[in-house]
Length: 93
Image (cartoon, rainbow, N blue to C red; front, side, top):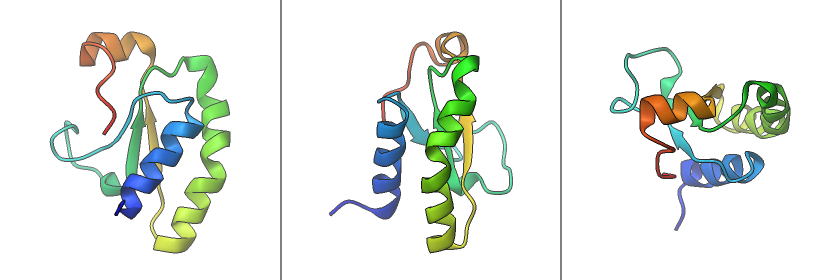
């Protein structure tokens, strides 16, 4: 059985054109911040594509907030940052 979080991540992956995605967690985050447990990272997103991606995710994020009562956040990484800081795209989680 697929968890709610895994299902959300799969929808984000599909809406992000199958780019690598993952939930932010204590291991992958350099520091703690409010809302980390509902923050998703998407890799290989060019600066010019960020707004369009956020718009594609808007309805999903709104539905998750309505269902869980928790807002979702999005962190994007450019292809250059993905390569420099992550040695290429991290495996999809």
